[in-house]
Length: 372
Image (cartoon, rainbow, N blue to C red; front, side):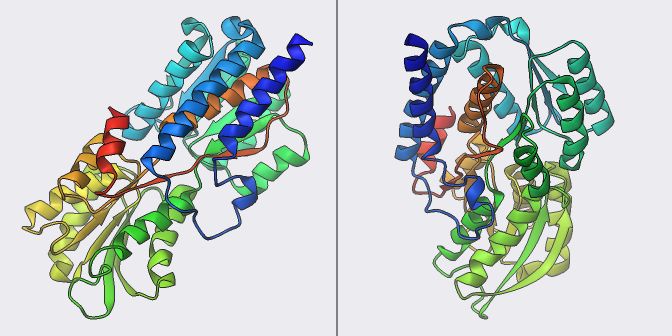
């Protein structure tokens, strides 16, 4: 009876968390983003997440302490994934009760072959669950089949496999799930941030928003959706747009700086907006903007995604128009909870989504306080 009560506590607490995640599996086919989440709502989510952690830990009864979690991150020098893995490790060990020595995190070094070898080693060493941030999301079917054959459940994070693969997990009852955010929402928020400026992004008043797009990896679904939906938010609002340049920046600050520098040299004052698929690239673009003698929010707009501390500070200081908080806290905690549910033999949805949060000058300080 006591175990039943504990299980119910887990279910109710989990329901509290996931009722606030507006981008569940059922919304993957939609195009409209939910309303922006406020910092105050985020604090409520934090409280619910803590409640869930306690409920999960209590229901398991400390049994996870000796369970082994193998984690592979696509590369350690990615700004956002550094924040993510730090919170993930903290949550697993401090909140959920895994022994520190049983939570092993490895660097995929941006090399899928290297990462696949790490995963094979985890399997050989009979880890109880894997949490994987793939170098290439397209490798998910192969990795899933490896884990399935070994009887090891897997939680994919941050880089989403395609919908066909996710549906296969559900149809074939494979112990695999994806935890992340719907990148369409982040792109939509970027476009809204431009539309919400005093001139709706049309700085020169010619009726057209002329922009350059600095992409991450164009084969990555997040890059694809952020690219598409940032512009779509403007056109859906009735704005005409003109793409001056779209170029791959591989999520890298130095590459983005060079792309922006070259574009500013070539197109000059024609560029009214620089869209960046992440904040690392926005930081690089800002360096180029300042070197060119341009001023953000005066004669050019700049938006990114992730809400890196430096980027949020730039929003406060007027050096970046806006960003979108890619909530690594909620994602890491959800990933940890799904790992525990797998260990317990409970059913897990094939997709678990967490909301993004729009970051503008109005709420940037609240977000920065949360990050610190």
